[in-house]
Image 1 (cartoon, rainbow, N blue to C red):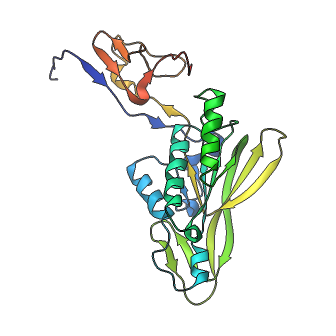
Image 2: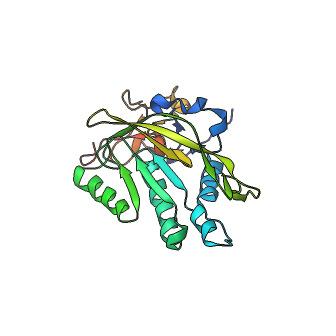
Image 3: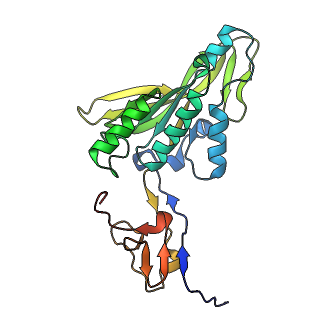
Length: 250
């Protein structure tokens, strides 16, 4: 192996998304593959953006109505909240009759409640609400399965947005999500056209430093660093692999 000398070194290995808690997101029903997005790589984000875009042309008012699809983003962490914010920004730029319905589902009382103080997470959740994001807090998605509904003109397809389907009604695959409310343990079934499972847990990639003298955080699994993101003399860690203590965030 080649030895490389340096005066300062920055380690920023990517993390890996963990399976989405109880859902077993790696073993979803095959027919739902085009309706559930785990956001594992850059291509998944491109697919999501394409699926969220409205139909470019409409022949009548009924076609415009069919454009409004129901999207759900599950996860109140950084990834889920950023995705919801980005989709709501796209929505706000569209004419009102073309906007999709957007729902943010998470188990915490507010978005990013695990990372920010209550006043800040409350502010972020209210801010999203002002952008027409429906929030379902204290809600745990315990299962997803296929649900069918009929449409008269268009069939949803995430690669081609809406494909014209002349000749009568067609079966349109939808996703039924089962939610358990944390306040009273009641269950609620909701149908969506598209669900984003934005994992709130990232497994830090630390294989690179396993054989080094760098300290691994036994609790979070990342590389322990100080307030300057320095793990060792002139060795810095950034991104998902960095584990540090913050007075304000913990």
